[in-house]
Every structure is written in structure tokens, then in C-alpha cells.
Length: 495
Image (cartoon, rainbow, N blue to C red; front, side, top):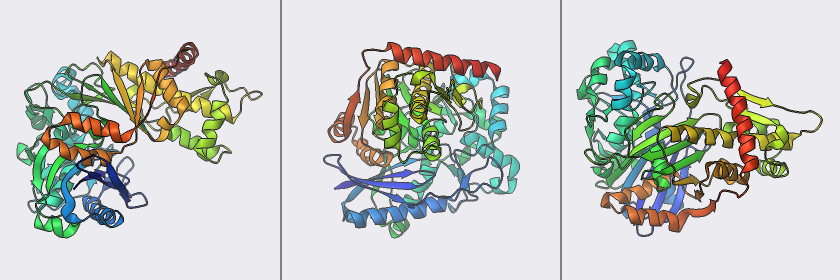
């Protein structure tokens, strides 16, 4: 017997099957094989067709069943992870009224910033735990202001994962975690953020019914069965945004537990039980997957680093090298500190953790007589690692006390230089796990039973790869980091 996990990304859909009894991953597939497209009618816009997500979900399920010989009757539950902060709006028949405005669309920045200034930092920080910023609520307000004829036809708004659940079940609902990522949740009063809805002039009737993150949210209907191949009556047991889900996939649920991701961009996601917010302009705060009304809070503090793996990929594409492995080997022959070469790695747009400053990538202290591409490779890995450490320092100033850091066995965390640098400077072990968001979502379908202990055991038994421990000699790492930080702060002070 199996659970199905879906990860609805903006570049692809991933589907995974895990064995219920052991939690073991049986297989993962991706659809489409090439990246999904985005529509950008204007600069800064990013939209996708919700129906395209569903089409790729159905294709992925069929591919998974065929490739791993999985019968429809053996799938006993579904878990869904999805790209955060997107907006899907539907009419009374459940038909999308326009393309989805997705997470990386920036058209609502001014709307959110204006709301933050009018409502006030104190109210936003204490109740929303964030600025309304460019999140789902602000995107919905943009539709109201700019497309009133479409807005007037809205029956419900949804997040991307809500829409996929609806396509399976013909039932529209959402979760507190989902509403919080859209900045619709008032943590102070544990309810829909009426004051923001009133400020934006949004009718509360547009909010879907709320269900628990873990539990029987809905079941596959006849139409869902016909299109997806999943048997009618199969329960949808779980739904969460991709970053909370990535944390769940790494067994990160409790205060002091931290999940890290080192892909094109980097993410540090730390769990706390405190509603206190000091860094609302640099850190986002959402209800974690195990947040419950009236209980001890479980808040996920999300810090994003735009200029992470994209920097290393840029070097791969522009240096005379053939692979990341070759780059890593070159870097290993260079001492800590890269013989003085310093690489400021923020070259992927405005950095929220730097108060939305766009400072670009900078290569500093390059000596043309002694430095070569090996120094650039080492300096890049160190610079990205230093940006993670800088981010953790911000989280610590916001009250996070890391006890354990867990990361997926992908991209940057496959580099010993990167992982050792972060571990040594933070003074924490980094546990590496071979898992994905789709596998985590599939396993999470089993959490409707409430057995978090066995869930964590399955991750440890099936996925643990290795643990990086802080190195004994911290001094050279600290010297290199302080030099990097001094260079960064000189640049920031000029901006």
C-alpha cells in the first residue's frame, strides 16, 4: 500500500510514491521533462495556467504508475506540496478566471508597502508577523484595482495547492498555514485578518473553508478519478507550501530545528514557538505545518538568499571547466580564505535579507599574478556559505536558537567546502538527508494518524546520508568570514 506525494513547482511537477508501512521511497518522476513556461505580459510579471499544473499532475501520476507498476487501488492517500504565495481565482463553477499570479510576480509590491505604512509596522508585525508586501492578499487587491470585471466574478481565491486538491475532489478548502503564507491570517487573534481584508476591501466570503493541515481534507471525486486515474474516494490527507513542506521532509517541527536548502537560491527555515518579530522586513514568518489554533505556536521563520547556487552555476558556464566536480576539486587545492580573494555573491536581484538592496556580485582582491580559477571556485563556495552564516545571524537576532540543522543531499550541500564552512562558523552539526519535497508530501499523508515519532524514524532510517561536524580549527574560517562581512558592509553602507 502506498501514499502519493505531489510537489507543484513553478518549473515542474514532481510526483513520488512511498510505501506506507516503511516510509521508503519507491520512485519519483517529473513532468514536464523540460521546464514549464511562464507568461510575462509586462516586466516583473509572472503567471502560469492552473490547468497546466493539473495536466502535468495527471501525466506524472500515469508515468509513476506505469514506471513502477503501481495499481490505482494500492494508493491510499495523497499529500500535496506547492509553490507558495500564488493566487488562483475561480468562478462559481470552479473555472479559473485568469492565469495564476505566481510567487515571483512583483506587480503588487507597492500595494503591500502602502498597506504596511498605513496599517503600521506594530500591527503588521504583531498580528500578521510580516509586511503584507508582495504576497497573495496584495495580489488579490491588485486584481480588484486593475481587473474589476474579473474580480466581480470571483467565487473563491485559492493557493496553488488548494487548486490541485480541488481538481481531485471538486471541494474548495485551504489551511491556516496556507492562509498565513498569503498574509490572510491574524496570529494575535487566531483568525482571518479582518483588518487587512477591510483595508483591501476584500469580502471574507472569498476565503475558502479551513481544514487541518493533517487530516481528511477531501476525497477524490468521479471527475478527479477520470482525469487523474486515482480511485474516487481516495483521501487527500495533507497540503502545505513548498518551504514548510521541505522542513517537514527533513523532520523539522520543533523550536530550534532548522532546515536549509542550497539550490539556485538558498533558504534557511527555522521553527520557533514565539510570535515575537524583530526582523519583519528581512525575515518572513508563517504558520508551520504543525501550527494549531489555541495551542503552542509553531512558526516557521523563512530567510531567503537569492544569490546562492546561481553564482556557482554562472562560474560553471563562464570558466573553462566541464563540471561542478571539477570546480570542487580545483577549490579543494586552495586554502581557507582563498588567498585573499573575496566574492560577494548577491547577483540575483534584490535581497530581502539585505533590506531589498540590489548590490550585485563582486569579485574583490583579485591578484592577476597569483590567483586563478581555483581561487574563484573556492571564493564562490565560501562567499555563498558566508551568506548563509550571515542569514543565520539575522535569525539569531530574531530569537532563533539553532539546535540542529538539516539539509537535503543536493546542490551546494554536496560540497564539503560549503557544508564544512557553514557548520564550523555556526558551531552546529549539519545533518544531510536524501529526500525531496514530493517524498516528504507523500510521507506526510500518513501524519493524519498523528504519529510524528514514527515519521521522524522513517526519515532517519531511509534518508540519512551523513553529518558534517564543526571543524576544530575555526580561526581561519572566522578570519575569512569577518573579511567578507567587512567588505559586504562597506558596500551596504554606500547604498
